[in-house]
Image (cartoon, rainbow, N blue to C red; front, side, top):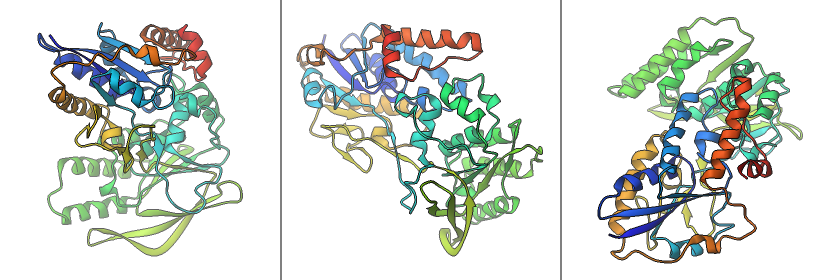
Length: 436
């Protein structure tokens, strides 16, 4: 019975769903050993460092990941970075296939003057800051002004705006990073604007996210009723309104009609607004927007502008993959054909494969499809390239599954007396110490 060795690079949803698909594909004629590599001492990728802390139900998928990791054919190599600690050239001969599940972690640029001023952040910095990612614990997030601006019209932009716009007491019982929670409690921000280039009918927010907004206990949520009405008219004029859009438009209508609670905090949506320039001396002081209109189904610049005084701008307009030595990238993704990296025994799943689209569950079907291709491509005779441990530098402290379980248990134990699901450790050295 052929037994194949597979390496998975990246311990996020794409990686664990790939491991699960391989485990499910095993039968009397085919078995796998799975080695998973993760550059951090902590696992679960965006489930840990991307999902908003006030959405704990989404994080419950981690139970599936832990079940995958408990299988006897699974080994974890945490705190090992492929492309730095291990070269792809060292991995490829030792495995029958390698699956890159490294995600998209670099924020796309707005490409406007002033974008590099202090106080102008990408969601790729802000989200891991409040979620306790070790690489972003020291990001400077100025919260000393009364106004913040979030640029983008998807769920990541919504998360950023909500974290800035809600009363932080709503985060006290969550796993928000301790440094971020303290900063948010001291925040002077009381108004958060969310700006989108197109109309409400084009926004990529999902209806469940929108329907939550009027339920916020301490925050007014504002959108111009005329803007919602105009969006509905444009959608109807374009033909039959699909189910997803109809649900979103209804959610917008409910937000527009919801009576404001007279709270001191406000989130306000501004559509048909394109950022033109971020102004300031040494730090952000103002954002200038161009006013758009829809003509013939297209977004057109009217030539008019307006500005918002602010010290903080968060852009959430997409991500691209960080390059890894030995892997070819194009258009912000691993260069691939339906998951195959042609001419190699390398495959890719998740955002590294398709770009930053879909929800966590999308990676499950993606992984299943790519694993089918991988199995089709396997040589009749498995490789025997030796064990990978012989080429991992001895100076590296490998975090195995037992070590990660210790970190996980310690964080949960630290959270229990505080009524939190966990208290995240954000220093690499301390995480390694917990594992040992």
